[in-house]
Length: 179
Length: 179
Image (tube, rainbow over all chains, first blue to last red; front, side, top):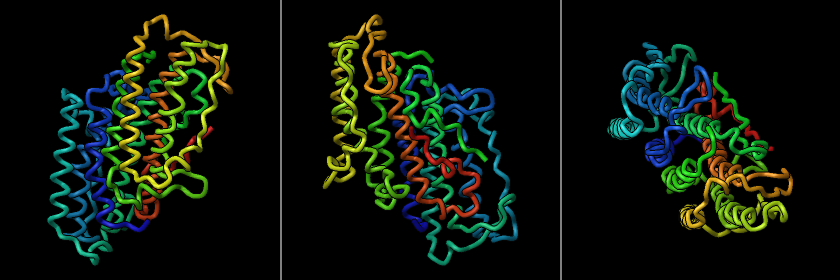
């Protein structure tokens, strides 16, 4: 599947509603639990998605368009949500994510990107040269990686409750595939 | 996390809406694509969830309540959806899943299960003795295993589009954990 802007935005538009439908008012025994020390709960993951909307995706799109490879992206703080989500409820985070995502997709649309833009290059601080097309595809795939994680973290909470069925449930055997 | 009926039903109620928000009218390049020969697309997975609502979960609850261990569950056909989804659209499947799930949760509620029921035992054709509590937990965890799978199958379609970011995206490194 080649990258197409409309495919990526179709997914990016849907993620906040999907997470909202899954997580809003789900008991905290699911949403506040993680997989052990130094792992994330569903609540933490939504905070991470919010931080990405604020500091990562659209700022990097703009960096490529304005500076090309001459100015590398700012590194992404993958632990910022611990502070930023403090004192908030999950419904608040879900609302915040939906609102930021919607505003970012509005900004992206207003750029009126043309086919010749997608090959434009930027500089990732660790990965080196990347294209605008790869950045947009990664924004969408990053949603999927965290939906994958959330389903795993929720599943983990039932690892004992399912008894012998654990053998058949793929999600129970996933230990994550983090870099 | 011990199994509680209200936790399982909270999740079971949310899955159809979450899948609807994620998949309805998403381009077919995402939803009709699988991970290669003998693997499932998101469309196939929703068909599988429908088949479970029709033949697996509530019939097994009733089997335990009516027959205990004396009559084993009917085996679950994990490939039935290929025929049953034929000629249907994904929005039709999403509607069908939501409607069957809602009806099944209605039936489950009408059973007025009490705490002493959850330890009741049934006979799984391959796993042996299982409890009603384990069956109900597995129904919910089975939703999560397929949400995990759908996010992986969608992510797989962008494995090339993300370029070097693939290294950072856990979902791209998941190959499933099927039994």
